[in-house]
Length: 283
Image (cartoon, rainbow, N blue to C red; front, side, top):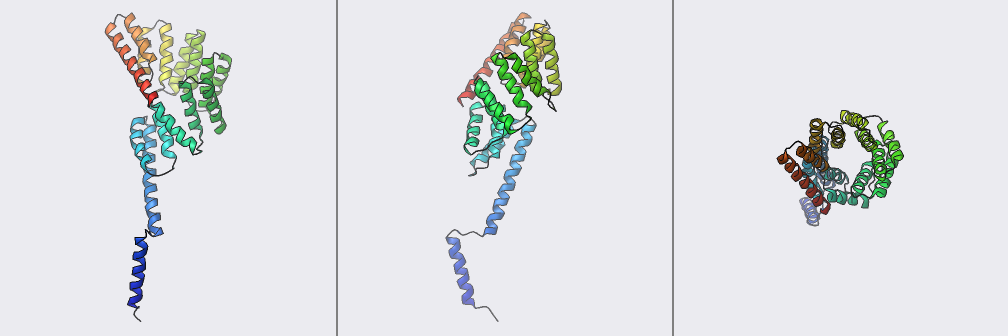
């Protein structure tokens, strides 16, 4: 028996009325949201891969457009905080950390980033507090111990610093930051041979760790080995674009060798680093 055409017309009219009111089929909505989620996950994965390849600037370019979407998804903000920190955009990193904190997002890496930013501001008590909180969120956490060691070293508490560095260096896996701390402590004690050994240990574990090359260069300067020191300090400057200290030493070494043009270039490069850091604080 044929369906009543008047009934079909009424159904169509009802559908048109619902559409006019903004009704969407739940299945269509779910499919669209799933498609957006897949796209966001793919973008996030791309950014993570860029960060693993030590390309934070490229990661930022991928992540920043994700913030335009009306979403409280914390993952892009987390990765952006890491990427901004790596590129020396301290103010932007803090902004992302505040966004995450306001939404109750807790993670050991975020606490460590707050600790490192506090250390940059020379807020030693805050840096230690954040590092200890990070170690409560994830234990063991060698990076937190290494940061606590740096805080205590800056305070002049060598025994506490050494204890923290030894805890960090005893953990499984590469612990370059801990060995950098041991190198700094040895240098401070005047044991330059031990400083060289610790710095080389750090470089062996993490070859791209700029501060390891820096302390190696510092120790080699004290050992009157200017050519090896220059190579180490150049590596530190290349790997640590936010470090100005290598350029100061390079300028001094170049001047001692009579290369005043190179000394001037190194001073200029050091001033450029400091200018970028000041700009990063304002941002």
